[in-house]
Length: 195
Image 1 (cartoon, rainbow, N blue to C red):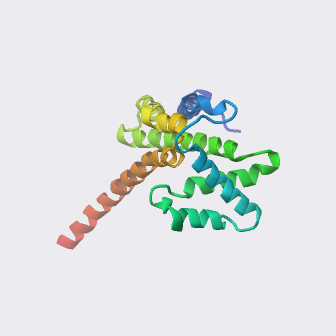
Image 2 (cartoon, rainbow, N blue to C red):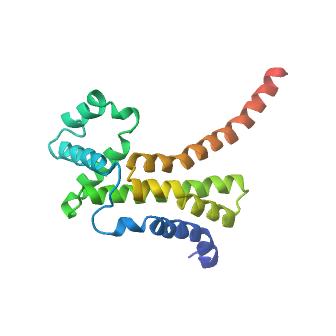
Image 3 (cartoon, one colour):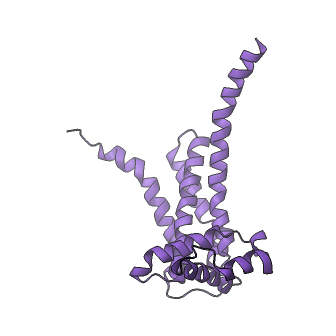
């Protein structure tokens, strides 16, 4: 049986624990009953509920209201991507047997993507800082507590924008990894082409 190095294990996973705790603290208002007032609250909850009803009726997210409202009537997919609504509606559909509703799915989605953004900010900072765990954890916590992101999530109820802000670290991490892995390969191939 292999010996477990608990100190190394703790040191490895403590940033993840800090990211999750920071995510919970950054969105503590989501744990209150109901939902805050905000500019976009009714719109997003209506979209989630409509998709959920489409799932329950076997339309699998292609309900007439959602399609008409999103594409033809207001063309709101130009500025509100439907992915966050689909994610929350699918979450509500999966957990509806345990009493999930649109507000709970809405809150869960914001919390889940806050954690995802913290993790990818941490990974990006680990790449840039040459594996400095402390600096990377600080960067992740800073991004989680970014005032505009918190304002969008808790005050404005700008649901799609909050989820979009969560994808910024994912995009930068992916771009960094592509550039880091692709350009050395490109240099080697250009040497072969020049020779």
